[in-house]
Length: 140
Length: 139
Ligand SMILES: Nc1ncnc2c1ncn2[C@@H]1O[C@H](COP(=O)(O)OP(=O)(O)O)[C@@H](O)[C@H]1O
Ligand SMILES: [Mg+2]
Image 1 (cartoon, each protein chain N blue to C red):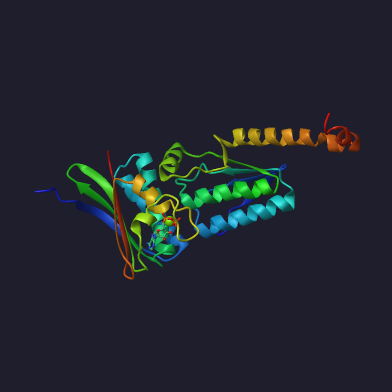
Image 2 (cartoon, protein in one colour):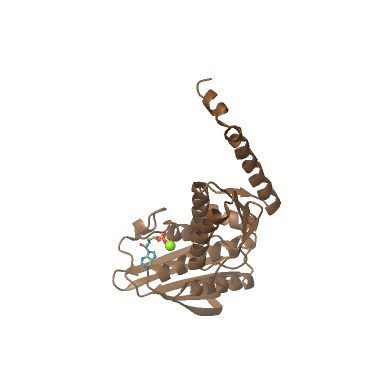
């Protein structure tokens, strides 16, 4: 296998990493996800790492980079399913996974993404109702 | 007289591609299981092996790893030795500093691997190459 498959469910992209990732496949996944977020206007990315037996500094950096890329493209990333032994090892390795949101499992990750997508939809509402709201908003 | 370390089984893996790094991880996992390391200790050893194998590939220009089940008296462990004939490490203290990289990594491979194992040794000579040896013992 030379690509990790990316599934689209509603406005969320789901990546389930099922193999021991070679470094160049991890890099390809970063790029593919960026392209796919733009192509599908996805609002969220869910990365399931429950099958991963280790996360080393390379995979850790990939997860942080994916979170940064998706933030710039206006999508949220949640990493789910990290095994306890992997989490313990990551901390000792010295990786902080800066900027990466995590959840215990796919269901909770989906709920997290749904919640943050809703909040942003609320924020958008004034625009949808026309210019009046926007004009009266500042300084009030 | 000190008890000698007995090598119970072992494998040698060449490291020239990303796929070889994955094979070294898998060999370390298999031997860690057969040495009966705890799940957390297996994970720590395999993670350290992954970091060191990648360094052998990226900075050492390729090389090889020997992964062995070893025994010292009643204790079993896994030893992994990474050897390359690359440029060597000019300033080892610097290379072992968290966050320091001469390339584009996170600078946590050497320093992090050292924290994850029970024994950690580097011998390196500029122009000759680098050998990193780690051991994780059962508790
Ligand atoms: N086998 C090696 N041969 C030569 N230099 C090495 C080797 N391993 C590590 N180094 C040097 O040590 C530095 C730190 O390594 P490491 O902690 O793994 O961080 P990173 O791989 O992110 O650079 C590397 O950037 C490199 O300069
Ligand atoms: Mg490294």
